[in-house]
Image (cartoon, rainbow, N blue to C red):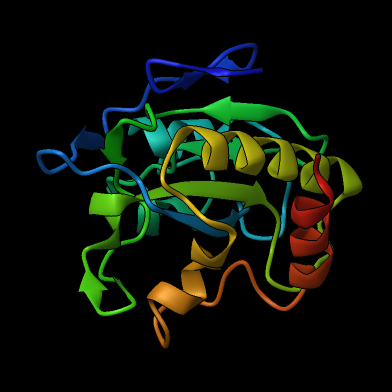
Length: 182
């Protein structure tokens, strides 16, 4: 796997319209980790792809009536089995962080990459997800001006509004795996 023109090679690509150009000369320097499950607490199925492409059927589940008009997408999703799906080029601004701030800078979408893990705040993520996340993170660190210190959770850029990736995310194990990479 490598990055070519902002896209990962060898992963499933589902192009989202929920993105636009980054500000001129802005390179991603922050990695934000999220979690998502649709319907809440359920895994698998086509619903995350549909949400991120604006095709979610509001009749498919009662919860979808509340969210089907959202215009959101992360750059990537890592499913429970470790599959990586990319929706937006890393060179573009995905609409994933919303109202946000990191180290005094607002509008984190301008300078960040968002990765969703299929999961919830309270259920442990899988070993396959951590393996894929570490692989993608290492690649992003090598391609963009992102440091390990500039990897954070959605809850840290939008405190009080967001809670993901949540207490079930193993930050210590993830950071250890990043540092252990050759």
